[in-house]
Length: 123
Ligand code: HEC
Image (cartoon, rainbow, N blue to C red; front, side, top):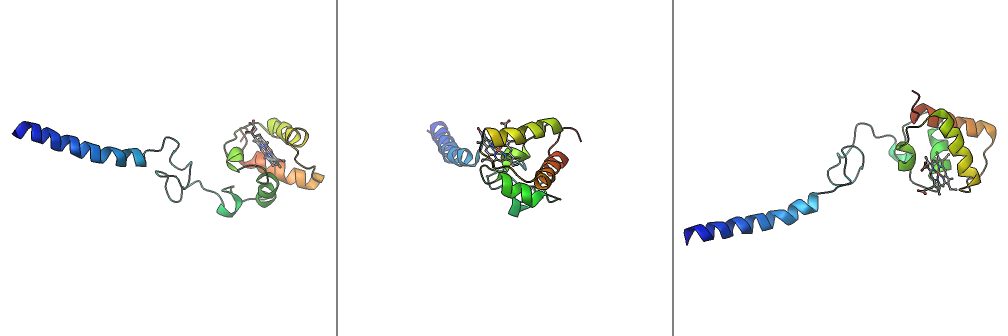
């Protein structure tokens, strides 16, 4: 019975190993993309300011965080790679369709400049 018991041992090992694998497997984990999820590095190189939801520091970063993260995660902003014109459109859409308040022109410019500087497809 040497052969079957070796098989049984094999099966026992793989059954013990599989749940551990399944536990560590995370289909959403991309390196650097999902901090805090297993598989993501503790501090990804591209990570922005953790106090600002990971937005990169810069002129207007704080204003952008407070204006936009009121409703949704900064992830929705960070994943964008869109044209400057599309940012202008999105700004209007956020106001007319999503209920974002209007901002004074200086603050609107500050935030839109920040978005276009960091999340534009044009530079
Ligand atoms: C009053 C709430 C509110 C505020 C404030 C707000 N948003 Fe949104 N935003 C939404 C909602 C609701 C959606 C749609 C989410 C969905 O359906 O997944 C959205 C979606 C988006 C999207 C995805 C658009 C797409 O094409 O799918 C982007 C980008 C975005 N917001 C950026 C911003 C930025 C930048 C700011 C700050 C200037 C901001 N939002 C402020 C409510 C808001």
